[in-house]
Image (tube, rainbow, N blue to C red; front, side, top):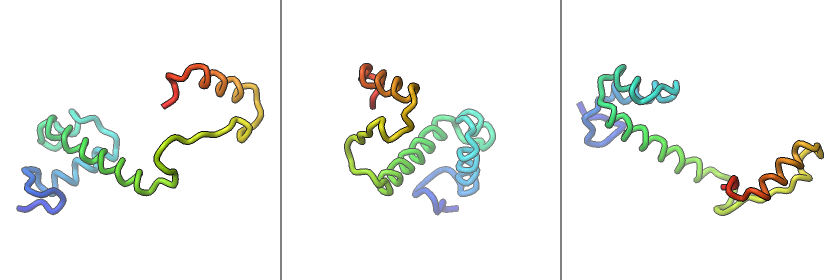
Length: 97
């Protein structure tokens, strides 16, 4: 039977739906492989493609432009904790992504 979700895939539609169901339930790849009967490397490849597609769609819907987003701590409540966190992040630039 031809899989309508993935072109020329050795995985059946039923297995594809099961993999996506277990992925949405946050199962590990080894557990998904044992439940569906598909090899773990195939599951990893499939899940990587799903995650990449999710990232692509989220980037398309993002309201932010590409680049960095900067905000000021005055936007948040003026508590000592927030000020300390922002100061620590500024001093430790390796934490910023």
